[in-house]
Image 1: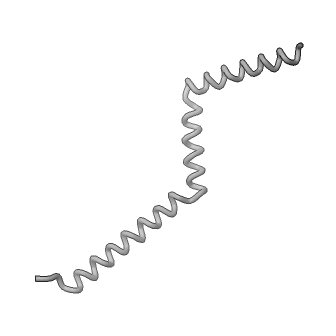
Image 2: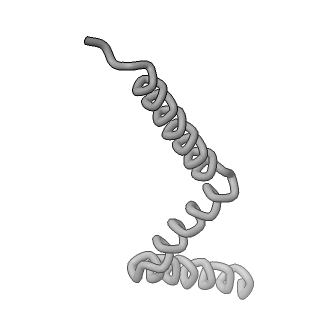
Image 3: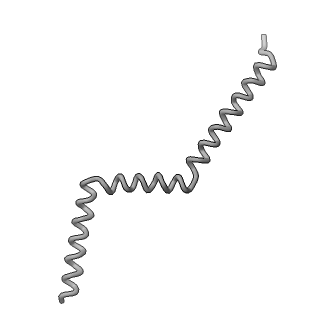
Length: 73
């Protein structure tokens, strides 16, 4: 025996509401502003790791020494 039309209509309405909610969430996630904020946060987390900080410091020291060497010659 088949389902009654009211049950089918409720299922369709529930599916429609779920789809609308999913689309709203995707539009928020895909917003350029939110994507940039997430990217910035990820980059800052990586840069603040100790091994990355030390690598940047080492590169800075080497570049500084090269610039000084060039200026003093």
